[in-house]
Length: 391
Image (tube, rainbow, N blue to C red):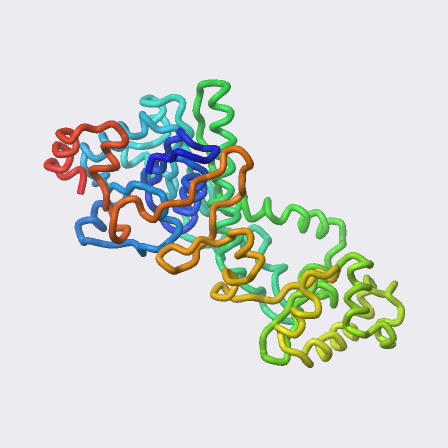
């Protein structure tokens, strides 16, 4: 898709396919109007491998499949990079260099190109070439240990902290920043986005608090489930609600609406931030919240000054009236997926297409249209296809 709307309209990005964080970065850029060309693996195309057709991370992108072990495949990749503004590559350090597509080679063809490198451990350091996944990166970054309940092992926060927040989102931010600079200087550069760096950055406040002696063990602090006013509670029907009444006025409002103003446990609201009183407060709140269903608590507390929300599953969230009113979710083929974010007042992004070609998002599924959009003639496409460089 050649984007016609969004703040990144006119920006061309070559995305070498990888696992979640790389495609997520490409999705963020495509959502905001960039023309993203996904380069899939030739082996997958030869096997007829189809990516999930409704995966939001495939939306709004063209797809071609190149054999990067074929010299013509490398030549075509370099030609595409010569017309691009940015590149996303998710491989271990040295892989692109061995393919003949390292930053120095690409820069010789396009000195303005911003070269985005997304790894777990980074391009340098003793672990740079080691295998790993999200859980490993956030563990070493110090961001896994603080998450969880007191007396329990650390809780795994899906793969949101390393892969997506500390990886794909960090690279998207870095690419846009480098593109802004390239617009002034006329020169591209390499963006080294490491998930271990991104996870550490997300935890900036926690490192400072820990160094200052302001953190207790896991699960005993204000924001990790230790405090009664910032926690989740089970309801009568086995669901959960979330309370985040940190400020005294919100805490007072919550206690009032729960009918606990005269309860001796909450008689002195000034004790809110005294950890010595937290266990008794939590136990009493747990008793109270277990007396009604989640929907009943929503009827009483949702939209009030209590900092309250129901804990919704991914299947439930899109139907919530607030999301419906804002259009937080799209419904492609009857299935929900998050809409582009953030939102822009003047250069609003277009509603993302499904994968640009019809049918499932097959590896290399719209080669002809994709290469035509990037300036190749039908004869040139046939040349690369006959040579086996394009599948």
